[in-house]
Length: 250
Image 1 (cartoon, rainbow, N blue to C red):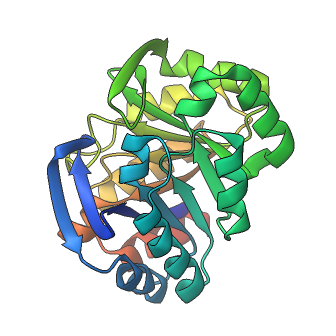
Image 2 (cartoon, one colour):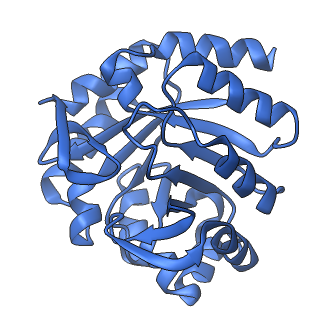
């Protein structure tokens, strides 16, 4: 199972939100590039980078994109990037600057024709961000909830050609309260042939064990997990997560 350390950028700084609320923000570093280098040194094979300002405003933030470019240049690690990806031009721009995988949520939720064209053109280099609050899809940087059930949404995107999903349970994100295994199981079961990356609430090695068990017993498409606040708060270390995941694979 792949482990993705999360680097959320706001105003050029590395921060974490609680449940996506901009009023509940903690700054962990003035230098996200230094953080990215730390995760590389500790064994990261991927980075998950989010432009929080871009997610809220609807297009990538110039200051945060400068940070992203430095992360790409100075770590050499593959990056999956999201935040403000609302059209095909932004997807193309992100891939051109070196992002390995672009996350689209609001854009594909609102525009099936755009979704279909992105999946056809870029394949698994575009992942669908599935952000759910109480089982319903949230868009516009998690500010706006829709009436669409997350399971229905992933099935709809799969029919349009989606090749990878990143599922976040908003209620668990940044709360250090454990993962929503039921929700992850529902999403993976809804699209059994398509890789799913889970995010939100990974707090302990027991959470990782539970996800590994889920993968082994019926969700082989559970491809990876994103870990954020637990790494910054020190309840987990990246080497421990990587070692546990590697043992399960062996």
